[in-house]
Amino acid sequence: MGAGHGHVLYRESNSPVHRLPPEVKIAAMVVFTIAVVATPREAFWAFGAYAVLVAVVAALARVGPRWLLSRALIEVPFVLFAIALPFLGSGDRVEVLGLRLSEDGLHGAWNILAKGTLGVLASLLLAATTTTRDLIVGLDRLHCPQVLTQIATFMLRYLDVLVGEARRMRVARMSRGDDPRFLWQLRGFAAGIGALFLRAFERGERVYLAMLSRGYNGRMPVVWQGEGAASVGQWLVAATVPVLAASIAATAVVLS
Image 1 (tube, rainbow, N blue to C red):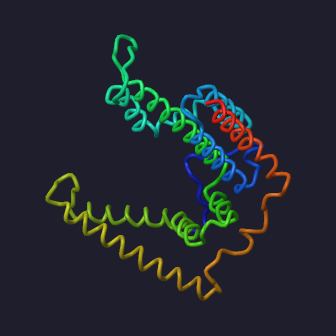
Image 2 (spheres, rainbow, N blue to C red):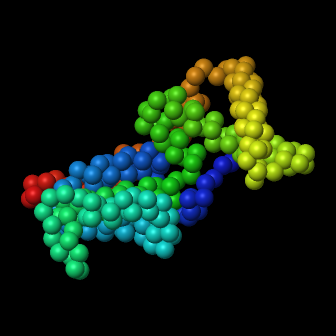
Image 3 (cartoon, rainbow, N blue to C red):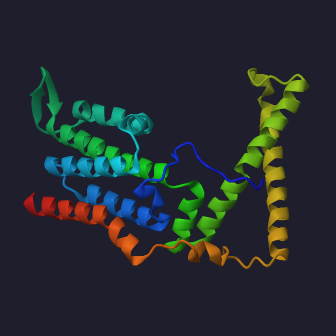
């Protein structure tokens, strides 16, 4: 239980992006995403500029395009929805490759694909260069509500414990002849879920009481906020990308 928790998206490296404090990377990603979303969909050049910014950050972080594109497949459901828009949209029709497509639908599909892809790539770069613990530390330093950061901390802390508990319960059920492939045994599966919830609740209560006995007062230790916090220089370095993105978005709005 004392082992550190990583995640499958994090890529160990000593790149300049990895060395930045987590709070500046989170803030930069959020501002970049807001700039992308605020950009008019007709400003095609602006999305090309955003893609260049993402590529530069990926190169600095030593994250390859193959890794990024393979993980970006998570947006496939949105891509399928975007593909359907030109066929289902109303308004004026244009002919593309022999097909009569909605002009508004085409713009809507492009809007979803461009902004969604850039947002996913930015999030993947953040996850690839920041450990799960550092993400929570960064949110805490950015004054995210303590309730949210503490829930996330406890979830990550004991997720492996609960997964192990569920695995042991499944082995116990299987050893007693349970086979979840049959519909008439779903009742046993549901009962196992309820038992797991009760065990998790009881374990959480014991952990909470143990924390109170050790001086817990509703906030994380001060070391989370102090040691390793971003300096002014690091904030200025990390602000390069969001400032450029905001400038591109402002220019696109003015020209549109």
